[in-house]
Amino acid sequence: MRVREPAAPAAFPAEPLPSEAKPALPTLFIKIEKNLASLGFFTPSSKRIKGTRKKIIRFEKVLADRRVEARATILPSAEYGLPITADQDKYFALQKIITGIRKREGVVRNPVGFTSAELLRVLGRRVTSGKNYDDINDWLKRMTLTGISSEGTVYFAGKRIFATDTFHVFERSVSLGTEMPDGRIAEKNYVWLSEWQLENINNNHVLPVDLDTYRQLRNHIAKTLVPLLQIWLATTQEQGCFAMPHEDLCQILNISRYPHLSKIQEKLAPSLNELTACGYLSGWRIERTGRETGYQVVFYHGERFRVPALPEKTAAGA
Image 1 (tube, rainbow, N blue to C red):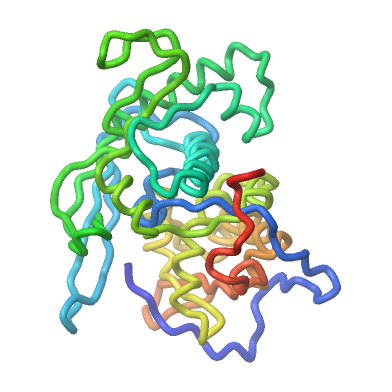
Image 2: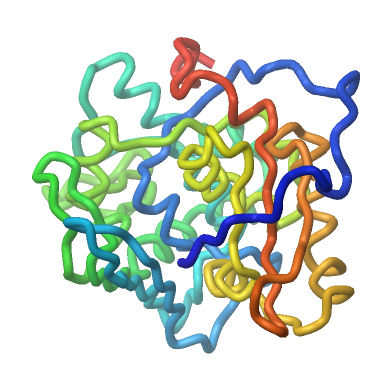
């Protein structure tokens, strides 16, 4: 992932948020593990993506004063396909539950138990719809079966190392009514978080996400960008903006790359405008890079990225 300096901000980005329309600061936060937030694990889509063998994300990072390339390969299940926006929604809902556990007990341990109705209420979905319960069962399988092949991208906060190995987000999952490892019948759903998820959550290697505002978003690209922007904008607080080559953005989002500015704007504008209206961004623009056919997207910090890193009021008691 290559970051370039944007043009001087004298030419302000398209679609700035009027000062009188700025939203109030958020009140409901969850904490999500940083690795998964940065990897592009979830693909923005309203339809299931099957038939894709893998999704590769390349990153550049600095280690010992030298630039190295790291790579994450998302390996989907043949039956359940790549994780998409709806899977991220459920994952964030689970993080609300996990955030509450850590606040109450001080540490998160495996397995994490929850009812499908509990998850649906966080999502604002009907608890009387059988399809919603089936969707949660499929989500548990998809999150358990999807692999992540890490080449220096997965960080263990406790050990302070980047790992090269193949991982899962959930090491195991058991649905209501199925058999637990000890032979009991599960009275709710249970997930066993992977070692790196558990270690990083308990070592506070996490990001704050405003769940209230996230649940208001309707565009799939906008939703997928929320945790990514939390990382990108946090590293550029002094500059007030972050620039990413369009080709790199397309890679991490797993969307088509277009050579013409009009098509790029057509694809991205609805989501970027929505993020601006919600206060995640104060504006954005697409501009040419030094290369003849290259473009980059410039994101300007919104008010929701100027709040303290982890407010005292979290989702634990919400």
